[in-house]
Length: 352
Picture 1 (tube, rainbow, N blue to C red):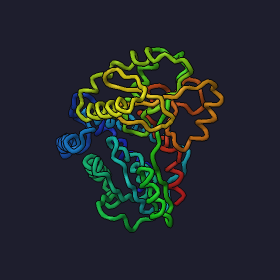
Picture 2: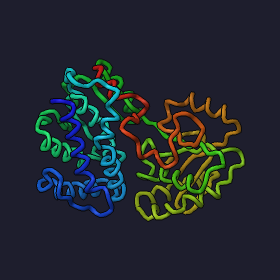
Picture 3: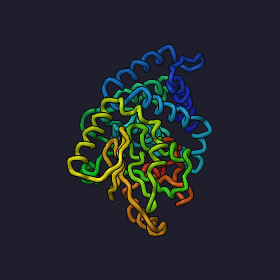
C-alpha cells in the first residue's frame, strides 16, 4: 500500500467528519459510503454523549471540526513532506489512549497508519465509541487497511512498539512494563499563559477558549497564569464572562461548588465570579473551575523558571514572550506537526 493511498483515505475521512462538525449536522451528497455510515455515526455521537457527561454536543462538534480541518490534502502533505516514509518495514504498534477529551488519541492512530504500520488500540472506557466506527469507515474507503487496525480491551500483547498516555502514576507503570520495547510514554502535563498587562480584551477573550474548552480537561488547556506584580484581574474577569453559561452544566457546576467550598473552609484567598475561581498557587495543575496564578517581577527569570520546568508544561500561551509560544485562543487547534510533549511521533515510528 502506497503512502498516497493512505493520505487519500484520511482526506476522505476528513470529508466525512466535516458533515458533523457544525451545530447542525448536514448530510452531503458527495461523500463515499455515506449511505452506510452517516446515520450510524450520528448514533455513535449519541452514545458518546450518553456514556461520558463531559462529552457535550458542543465539545464533540469542536473536536470533529478540528480533525476535519486538519485532514486536508494540503495539511497532510505539509506535515509529511520532511519525512521519507515509503517502503518501511511494517510493525505492530500498540497505542494506549487517554479519554479526557473526544478523540484525544486520534493523532497517534493517524501517525501509525500513515507511516505504514499496523495499529493495536487500547481505548479508555471514557472515549470508546467514536474511533472504532471511524476505523470501519477507513477500511471501507481503503480496503487495503483491513487487517491493519485492531481494538482490544485485553492485555496488550504481540506488538513491536508502544505509544502510551496516562497519569504520572500510570506512566511509571508503563515505563516498567514496556521497558523492553521502543516507546513513547506520556504523563501529566499542563499549559500556562504569560500575561504582561498589555493584552487587549480580544486577547483575553481568546485566552478564555484556551481555559474553558473541554472544561479544562486537556493537557493543552491553560491551568496556570503568570502575571506581573500588581496585575488587575478585573479586565481578565470581564473578558472571560461570556463563558458564564458553562456553570449550567451539572458536572462542571458540581466541581465548582465543591472546590469553592473547600477553598472557603480552608480560608484560602481566591477570586471568583460565580462560575470560575482563580487562586495564587505555585502548582501547574489546577482543579476544574479553578485556575492558579503566580506573580512575576522579571521576565528573564520567568523564562528560566519555565525552561527548568518544561517537562511539566505542554503549551505556553503568550504574545512576544518566547520563541515557541502559542497564540491566545489557539491551544485547542494544534496542527498535525504540533507534537504532544514536543516528541516527534512520526520520526519515532519511522525508526522502529
